[in-house]
Length: 284
Ligand code: AMP
Image: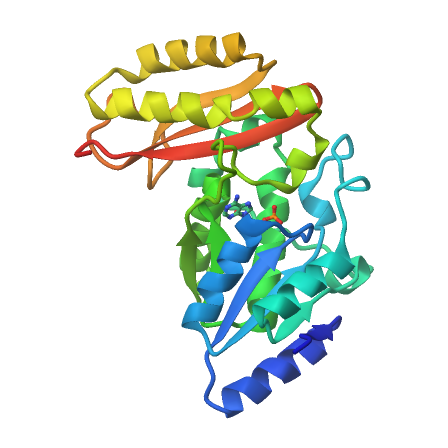
């Protein structure tokens, strides 16, 4: 069955109220569209746990800097809707930009702590944009649970923080990163890679995984970061925005892994910026 396509907050709230009246639970999967198997893993996880699932498709302008790819960001609404129909999603929320940000809009949600460093260093505007739109989507839909990918690990931590801090009554569910067979994390931006760049791209996951294994054996973070940077450069990566070993909860840097940790990186291949992260399990 085709999902209902909703473009106003009132229509979204009416659909959710109808499901609630039937006793259904409700899940929300926020996306910017250009859906791939990574997004669909979130959708399938939501469908498995909730009575009704809403997927939002909204390319959020406030999380892009003027120099970034907002206008050229891949958009494929017809294909997205076909995939969501196939998955059995009940509703798709596709608001216009001026529905989310009407004239006079003047509120920004800023999250401290976990947003420091990493993505923020290169994209200082990014998490305020994400936090503001996610807060709005959660309050518009008021789902029982919302689903986010570990692919964007700092974003996931930011969403967990804001939901706890603002008492938004919604569970945040994390879904592991979906990868191509060669290890590259699926991303809408992979479409920008040339054939040669696509061949180099899986080195990011390979290097992060090698670092995680060495750190789990007791290696020092500084040594592993030096080795990792050299390995990424040797593989053909250009500028490395960051390569860091952080506490998995607070995202503060660690020197040696003694509890759950994460290796996180952002690096450029030509004009495309790739991000990825892997867990370090000190017991593993
Ligand atoms: P985006 O449309 O890129 O904003 O992503 C929407 C959601 O899908 C976010 O929660 C992402 O973390 C998640 N996501 C994107 N790529 C993947 C992936 N390869 N595996 C799992 N989740 C993903």
